[in-house]
Image 1: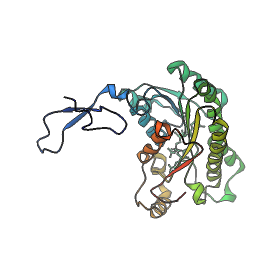
Image 2: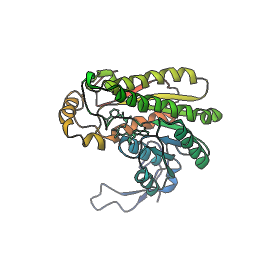
Image 3: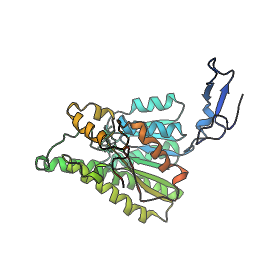
Image 4: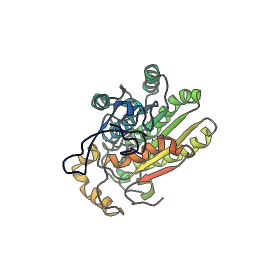
Length: 290
Ligand SMILES: NC(=O)c1ccc[n+]([C@@H]2O[C@H](COP(=O)([O-])OP(=O)(O)OC[C@H]3O[C@@H](n4cnc5c(N)ncnc54)[C@H](O)[C@@H]3O)[C@@H](O)[C@H]2O)c1
């Protein structure tokens, strides 16, 4: 029995199959999300590339986009099979691509494989970065080689991916690019100066691109997360003080999880943000006010 509008997903009209009778406690009924709803999500019919999505926050973004009806190209320098299998198990389409975002030939193959498989590219989430693998250290101890690596992955990687998808997006006069920055740029977080500088560059790049692309139908915005308990952050045994200081700085004093970022990401790729470009949304439980 279908009761349109009774149990309604905010993004989907006529959402759930409601199976009667109500559970014996009287307050619940079983909701079965039909596979047809996958085609009615916030980004249904869209094709998305998420970089750095083998695990961590990138995997959460990819799975959320798939739940909202997008077809996914999940990419990472690491093996993406887990994320791809989870997306397919949920009934959505996905391919996985090994891609080092600093290599233009890898990015070129990423773009062609996505277009070959799905026929278009509508969404790019530039999430790949050197973050979880970094060791906190004073500025003077950062070697030039480490500085260059962080800049190369975090800044040039986004540059390469944007350059790769632009011709495809321009052809259809549609595109949503979301660059992942970081709340650290507003705080000037110490002991990771290269990382903070790289994420500042991402915000600046986003603004410059928003103006340049204004007439093309392509929008470019930033999402700036606060410290989030991704797998890599959880695995940092000596980060407990860093984590507790962060929590104490928030208006909402709890750990932040990858899923806390999903609502803002979906807003930035979906139709509700169609008159918004060049902006940076901070999601951090109210630590910095920007
Ligand atoms: N976790 C946090 O607290 C936090 C806070 C603010 C911003 N961010 C940003 O969010 C994003 C994800 O964070 P996370 O915690 O999941 O990070 P993470 O370090 O766990 O994951 C980054 C992913 O990028 C991939 N990657 C690294 N180098 C690559 C390359 N050259 N080419 C392709 N992929 C590459 C890694 O394999 C990894 O899967 C990053 O951009 C990070 O800077 C994270």
